[in-house]
Length: 198
Image (cartoon, rainbow, N blue to C red; front, top):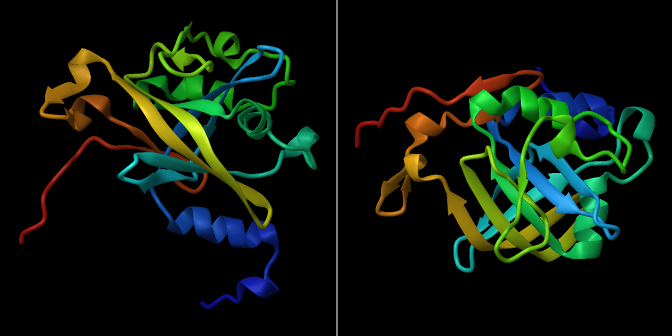
């Protein structure tokens, strides 16, 4: 089969992309609104953008379902407050992460809805997910509109890792972390690791 994306609908191209670019790490992004409301939502269009200075990027699409045609609260909050936190999702927090992805009204605190604990950050106003083993505080570097989506690039200004997930020498214990990944409509759990021959 071959496909010309210009001849397909947005949904058809999207389905091909999310079934091919796998597994994708999940950025569990916490933000705060102008009036102080807390927000938490997962995004699987996520990766490292720069090593020095350390930068991370996420891509945020438009609202869906009953919020179609609107901007997601995460984008609105990052644009106005210029700060956010990326929490890493281990597999054991999968249900809480899924709960926070629901289309709640802007006034709803997803931390509370998902039964999570919001804790203060060191350098930014948005809260961190206490239960997440790794949290990265970010300040907005730039927002780049790309077609239907917005690419958010943030500079990491502080890094947190729970002691039991830290191996020393700046290495993360991935076997203990068991990070959750996004597939097309499902999820993957990273549990088996191996090296390729040289």
